[in-house]
Image (tube, rainbow, N blue to C red):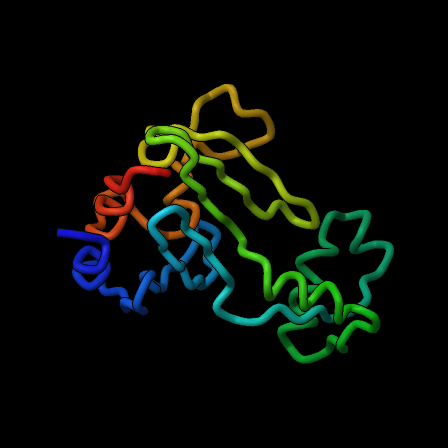
Length: 166
């Protein structure tokens, strides 16, 4: 079996040189994953739009600002934020995670971390089994592949891991 067959068995769509497969991230976000021989890039399925709303000082001090802002936005009380076109373009065009092979058992994982990016050198084990306990500021031990809603037991990921890096 190869990447193409693994893609199809996993429910993905083969697009000539890569597999496109949808997933839901560990945070509940719908993603589109593009799996090439040498890397995986995961993008948001829905476009990002920045919306502004207000919260009271009391809500902020009580730690309810985010919850109240989310309620107001979801009920249609938010307004499009001004001057956010560049941010929206960035968040819509940049992968939430990209995993590059640079050695047969070494990977470069670049991921979105709010308004900044984070990256780690990963092993096959941290991609598939669990993150090492010594990673700072990571509040989960989920393997990187699971962050983007995929699994190392999927035929497409098994095949991707077999491909040797250049």
